[in-house]
Length: 623
Image (cartoon, rainbow, N blue to C red; front, side, top):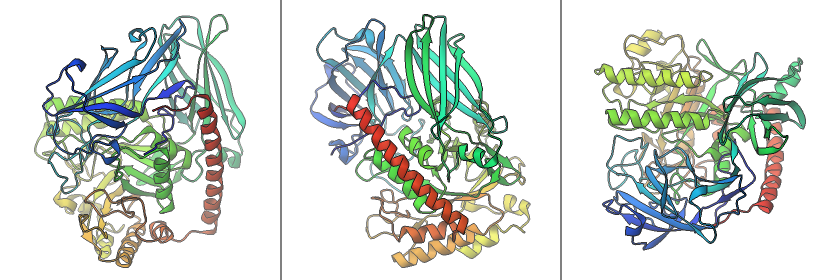
């Protein structure tokens, strides 16, 4: 199959890069017995970046194996004396060792976050270069962040086939000796400012200056130059306040009007020479909680989320191509949702790019480990910090979720240390990103949170209405109601003054596939399914107690048949009917905004296609 993958790191984009996806030599190592590339018997090929468990990889082996190996040759560009070549991996599950030309260049642990290596000094003077990757991934290890990956041979209940090895894009880029390493953005709506944190690597020397140009709607918002001090630039960039609300609103990012601010960054040397140049983007938007409401840009907003696990039938947790990621964002919006809860997966940055571009709110959730040990704590904390660092500049992300349903902390009510762990990760997340709410443990047994997330799969609309009616005594909901058989809060924290989100409900199964049978309740026909969904959503939408909801789920996933879409993304009943049930009838103003959004998206698509063609003309993907 032919795949087109976009630029893998959309918020720090350079022109000179080469995609290494495609055919690699491959070998399974069931007992992890081979330790160096010379030991390996290369007896297969694999289509990177698809995991060997998937059909798209060409391997399609869903059995147990402790390790696997990858190898390919590639051509390095001719480097100038002041240039370097960086090898990047989007994500490799779980522990990777990488050799270039028989020399170890990097080791990395963590299946959902990126890593890289400067391979300049390992390159041969001429001819093809060799890269080899050894991946260790114990299928039975429950003390590592693994999300929905099953530890049994066959998928069961709500767990799915495993993901081993490379599952996101591999690529190289040519960078100068002194380069822009990272860019993080924040925004301050009250002060009308954009916050910039930039770091640099390589031979960082003085004097250096960073020019930052921000623009939107073909208008320059800022064009400033800052001195690099200690290898960093930390600045609050003041924008000219337009004063008039209509003009201010045009510059704000939201799910209905996803205005992005394009950023050009240039690193200049002391003699006036241009050293490095990257493109990025940011946005002006503000997330807040006011009493029991979620507030976006100063306006209370009902969260209409859908739980999205990010799996595809032939490709597993890797999207078939960039268009599939875009299509998932468009489908969520077409079904009337304004956001998604990405469940037990740190999603590919290209998905977040399309959510930023097309306007979709995202809850980001850490994949769970399932044992509480010193090792699992260290592993999860390390990878969660890396995920926050990778994704905190995306305006689409509106909440962080470190834990789900007490997974990895199974004895929260009885064991104080487990409660401390949840509280610690909540506060650590708030420390690293004070701009977004944190849901410490989504579902139940909350000990530290900004939003109370409740999982309740009662399929009776009348019972849901009665349970969460606004006139109910709040203490009764928190102390006596036990969805899933669990207390909603622990240690006397009632959280009665915080927003409440029904963050999992529904789960109605309907499928024409006899093997896809799992769900929390069941419909026997498409019409019955449509009726049940409509009645349930009408009940939930009317609950003034709730700041929002998240329906389970976006699409069927392996044996789970409780999606609004089949696994191949066909709707189970017409999208227009799903949208009407999800959000209710549109007002005239909302209809106008919908038309405006569609016109905007057509223009975005035209610009994206033109930009993609320009980049393809300059540096086509290979492999």
